[in-house]
Length: 359
Image 1: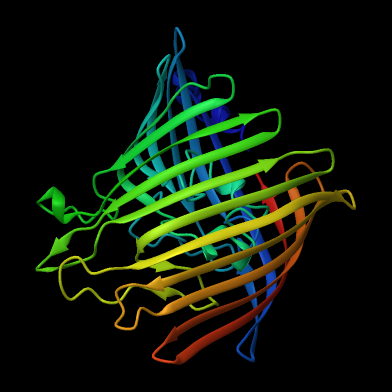
Image 2: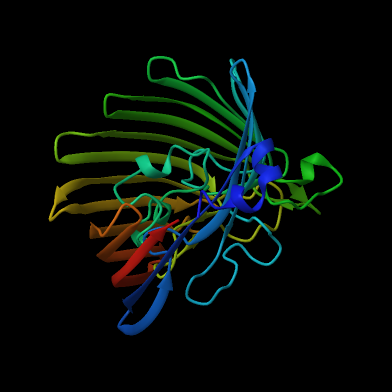
């Protein structure tokens, strides 16, 4: 499929190298949540289903222009994953490369999110990255955002080191008349990737608007990830500290949310998340195991609700070819919110298996 497009669009191929690509991932799952059992077909358990276009034109002298246009879809029903408002909801950006690095504009994932071609965090945040149900690092970490109206920069790699920075003028695309009435985001960090060792350190600052006298305090996130490829196995460790998060976690576990803003500078959720795990080569594939933990407080709540989340995950990949992989896994998780002496607890067990094909 990747080589087919130039045959049908010769004039486009002459101007730039254009590639059609995608992932189709579909499986079956059994989930038991607080004693209730559900059996369902699911899309994107291992990797979210998507299709897209990539293009690149070499301008000479180390310069190039490239683009990525990518849309997500649910392979079990054909729906658009990011909603009907987006033609390319996963990613849409134009990039210029030169001796000073890579400069991009458009809809780009937060560097500390696991979303999009600019992000180094996802595959380094744990063995399950941002997939495999509640095994995903987004189950305990904050600000996993796809951001509209974003500028991004990556430095050239220097002996394994790379510096990155990005700024979004309007994360949610609300397009308010005043810039301060839009949610803005500034982040940056440094990575070291050489000889199988990956070290990442990032910080992010979410600037929340105050509209009609209501709003949240600005949020900050700080993340550190470390992993090392050894012969036959790869251990991971990642941690994130977040202040004034608006939301933490994903279903079927309890999603922790900041209280409704009824005045300026409403506080959000403060907490720390830790993920550790490993990849192990076995059975002609890869066995994965991880544990993640979140502990925090909802600072805006009257009783400063205490929040906890614990997740254990195992999984196995078995490649049928370079493009097709069978997978299966199990997740067990527990989330707890405690306020005024009352506990709200959700327990979830996920069993799933599926097939992923890349084209």
